[in-house]
Length: 213
Image (cartoon, rainbow, N blue to C red):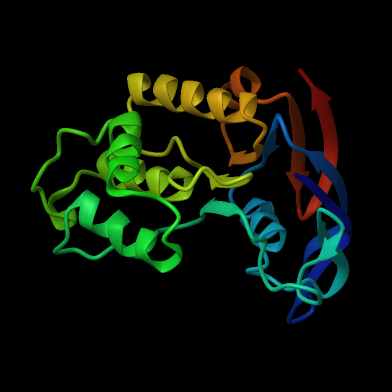
């Protein structure tokens, strides 16, 4: 997996929200996108997966241009903002609805990812009764369950306790070893430094610093 951003710019109502971002990212690595709220992190993640069309520039996934040659990457898992889960369904049933769209994974694999993120014992509990941490874990499970080659996570440690953050770090490190290209957006500098191979600092829509770990 190879992702290339060529001078990505997004202007809305005269406001420059992304300003000439150039990045080249490859599989088998975890990249951190560090910035405060409103810095452009979420918009950049959306551009990477085709949910946002840039005003200028292109996004290439393995040499194919998003928005022209394909609408979305073929093999992507995304956690951006609040996933739209069904309140009256269990964790398993919510993931089953998503899995049935592409029919790539079995019920056993759904149960496995629920165990991996720490929701294996939630049983018949409905999503409406989940804590914030449980909701976040289900969003992470949905992003990871089909073992995508491109993983984009926006503030994935929000509402997670310390053990769950450590568990997530281990999960993402395993995905990296399997060759996935992972981008984690966060305001948490310390967490990104523990996790990422390379960190891009974004401010007012511009990459202002790059750090290799």
